[in-house]
Figure 1 (cartoon, rainbow, N blue to C red):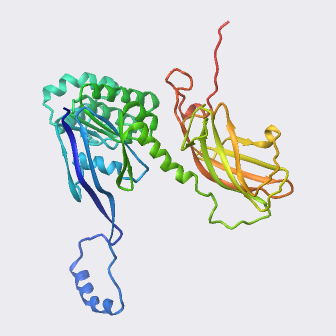
Figure 2 (cartoon, helix red, strand yellow; figure 1 turned 60 degrees about the vertical axis):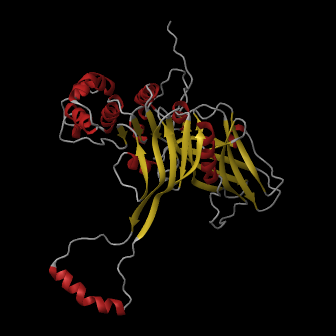
Figure 3 (cartoon, one colour; figure 1 turned 90 degrees about the vertical axis):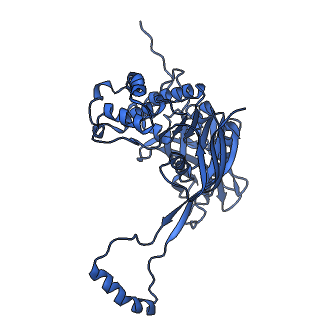
Length: 417
């Protein structure tokens, strides 16, 4: 029977927001405040009201020794707060968490590093923090440095490291100093694609040695590849737990609720357009709702519409895809392919079929919509939705270009003659 490595019971963490922060006051300020107090009460003046927010509430879970568990959820759901409590960085407001064995954690870039110390010195410092003897650290030292790929910068103060170098060294130390429990937050996103794959491989090695891993990420492909079990956190509470494929499906359904909301529900219908877009959705090749599309994988972009009458002719529809800095990457317009529609109902959907998918580098893009009929101004919604393109092995080599090499992925082959 497996032993329990992590037990959490009714865990909660409350933070204070708003209100004035307490500070030291001079004698003069104290005397003035005391004199004004009666007048302030008569005038109804009250000190700044403090409000509280629960980042976690009533969280209970058990993780068996040797399990690799993914922690997923939206930004602000409470994932990182949970890991900070488990790492003893912050105390819970209520409940408790028990962890059995040495804990290694990588929660933020450079966690536990002293900026004035060199990379070499910080390896020994982190090892000491984890409770390692000097001899233990020395046995692992060369392996740590080789994995982090910072040999030539080893004796440079880490304050001069880039964020990527910070992450490489911090992860290498946390993973190689043989913790019983390894806690990893979304900091791996700072590294490049090749290093992320290297880190995932190392976490698999750690798990095979019978150690416990908790992995917080927004990369669903990484969770599905690494973690047999996962936990979904929503608004500070556990919304789902169990097999990863089931939990990821619950997460995607949660995300799709936001995608299916009307893009302009609260806006007045202005202008002379007789038709407008009211929603944007994504479907996979089997027309199942999705929160993202894989690079080059088939799917559909769906625009839901409303019209002022049920018989419109000459209707055209388009979506524009931009990078987050506003650079146009692609426009998909029905008229490019000679398609102009005639409506027979005041409500419906246009499906843009993508049989070969969107051959875009994995990233978040902005999607704008256009819909209109002849002789009328079109209805345009700028940045109607975020478009999440996820990484797949597009070229079959395990490598993809970075941002500096462009946004498009094109199948190609070189021939020497």
